[in-house]
Length: 154
Image (cartoon, rainbow, N blue to C red):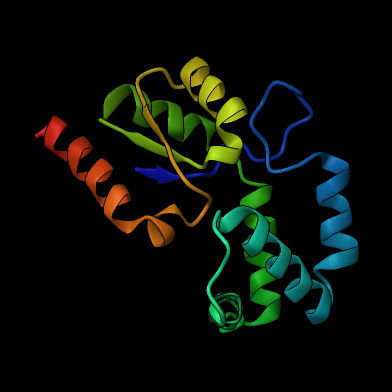
């Protein structure tokens, strides 16, 4: 089971499900994430615009940002770079072909991610719901979808 991340998040191929264009990600890595202020501003915008669909409760954004800030800044940047520059295509293909697998996809990616997954990993089931933190925002629905998947493979 995977949650809302392309196996190949950076590609020049316009038909692929990616995290952003090469230029967007280059700018983010070189101009935004090097500073603590830029990193916090990026994650604040990302949390409010991508991670959570609903209007956040008072203090909720600060809670999410404070949880994120527990990871040292340099480690955060390194993990982000590692994720964006990763290529798990072969591993995802093997899992899709050999094991029951499920990809949760957030609604904002559905129009790109679902066709991508169906084309490249046709044996992986997909489930579209919520934003990136769907398991946090919709725990009952998320757990039900996961349970249904697990019950279908046992």
